[in-house]
Length: 451
Image 1 (cartoon, one colour):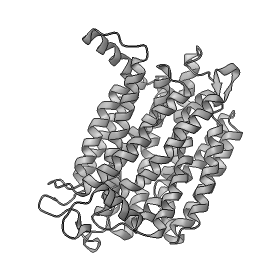
Image 2 (cartoon, one colour):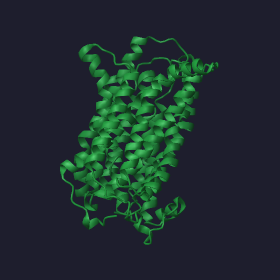
Image 3 (cartoon, rainbow, N blue to C red):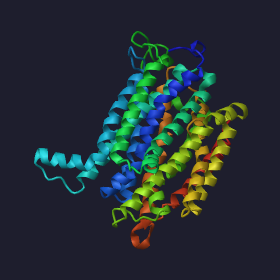
Image 4 (cartoon, rainbow, N blue to C red):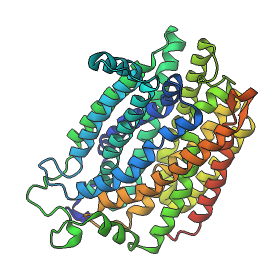
């Protein structure tokens, strides 16, 4: 493992090469966020069942990333510690993305090949399994990706590196979300959902290959990869967990900040698509009613545009936020960014039947998203010991993934029982009131962090 003073300063080209793979990762992840609900809803999933399927993300994040983090810290390979996980995760994710929208067809194929009668919910079961595969493999790539930054980027450039990752998240999401609406607008062609998932898989794979080819890690075949122990011994996950909380008293505050932040974030990311379709456009849930397919496609495209606006603002403000953080400090910039998101959440709930206002508030919430994607990691990175990057980022992800369980269960249950229109629709706007409260708590915790 290189010491920090041996790391070469990154140029703009280096940062772009580093960020491109994450752009592909976010392209795939955004497609899964935006279009999983229409796929599972068409297979009969209720809002609460959809929320339970979303548990794939937090559970794989809490289990996969910490384990993969420790494994990558101790990996010996001619290709380095992180790149095998980046590429392997991307390839398996791409296959699962292709299969997911074809879940009903896969269920029928299994029935014919093995001469068994698959249950009516067989397609939904396969879709749920594939969601878990997608989320697990994205986490296999994502954890080592964050750990790659302290591996190859000088410490004084960590905030810039994380801001380029934030930029990639915004741009990747914008491109993913705008393709189908743009084709519809320019050529009156509605891109099928399965084609959009296939596009995401290809983009993820190609972008990750580029980053793996252009960002060089040192071979770890003949080195003691975990330098933290001093004698080359591998650390267990529980040792890493214990040492994580001993890094600094501020680490506990950063983790608590993340806990409340990600309850708030997932209130938007999980429910923005059904909110746009069923609340803004007032389309009944597909599982309960016959719907106008043309109007439903319009609503789905509108949901994609909402996410595109959200991520476009993230893309635009990512680097300026990094510059402001360098000047005024991570904490101050992060608090102001989260306060802007609180205002946006309240606006989304109050103006939920006005499509234009919803787009404006989605854009405002993108400022907070840019900060969430970068500054907490920059705050934490100053406490990471060389050789423990993977395990630290994996454990840190528990405080991102864990809060999602709350959103997927309790918030999903609350929405499920809050019916309107004779039981054919739900109060999805409740998620933004809950999210605003949690972001306010996160802001208060952030104010107590010492820089």
